[in-house]
Image 1 (tube, rainbow, N blue to C red):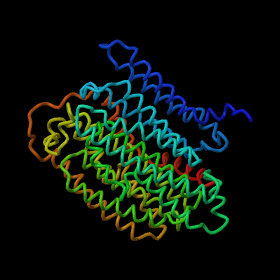
Image 2 (image 1 turned 30 degrees about the vertical axis):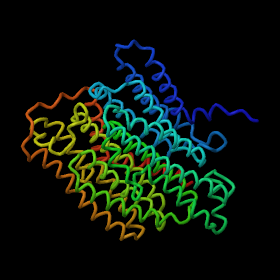
Image 3 (image 1 turned 60 degrees about the vertical axis):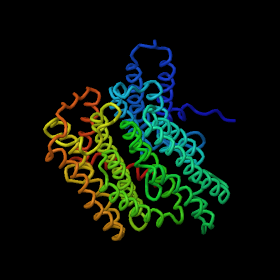
Image 4 (image 1 turned 90 degrees about the vertical axis):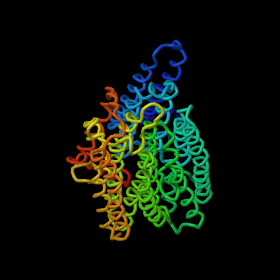
Length: 485
């Protein structure tokens, strides 16, 4: 058997870096004295995510290609998502640095699981073999199942972890059964080989069934309707920084898997599945958010709606330029990550011990009690609406533009109507912050430096993508070209 060349290991170097740092954090935790501070573990984890982001580009950009017998394809598409996931993990660790002390959460396992979860998410974005995608999905899922229940003294946190685990296990079983059917039909689990076989003739009925089952598994990770039932309860009970991770990192990885599998293989029957899921996600997500007074649940339903907007980008390439829809989806993923992580950073800071302050009433008068936090949260909410000069505006513009160029007027109208509905509940939060009298006179806790850095970075990216989107969009186009080559 031929030895594996060293270049193959360079193409999974970010994953190797995160794995090593995760092991170091987990092993160092029990070696520290019982009363000693665990904050250095956070610094080690932070260095790991930053190093993973750097190694994704250097030497990653100059070492593109397939690895491990074609199971991994490290190209511009994978590099984009690797950097995105590494930065999301970095911001979550920064947001967690003081949060863990307030909530009395053990740090070693927490940071280690974030790093291991990021390994699975990154591997999902570059894998071109369905079994490897399944393994990477499980690495990511197991970590987030545990992290969702990390507030062990709170019943809702344990409930959220159990619900997430049970429903996630069912969804994973659907995905795995879909892989089995694909293998039984084509004799392969390699995406390029499956694409080659499906392009040669008419796809048998089992392939349609396999695509539907695999979409169930991925749709669960996306929190897309009708696979979204778990989202509000899990988001409400999980630690707020982990919700920031769950609502962005696994979604980015799952969208990357859809892009890797759907477009190269021209998987049959997926168009109407995605169309119905997009319409349901936008509608049910926004209607559900209208009824919420808990900000975490409101943002959970918002996350469902944004999964629907993003799925619209998958529909345009059927009748138009595939590159346009894929680049729009990539850009939307980055934009949503920036504004959603920033919003949850503020929620985690204001939640207090036991996360008891997450209702809209707790945000009444925030504009006077803490003008800076209110301004930052307003920025993220305006971006989620899609107001010009924010990342959300160009994200929605590119998505709906790709749909219109494909003459998909119906789903575009549904998306625009839902965007108008969504503006109500986002603006409602701002009304509470600036036009309601505060219910409590206690001062807002000072923002720790690490949390401050996470919020500022998220705000800068949100504004940058809203004012100067060309750079990131150009790289998204390059990633789309590599994917479609």
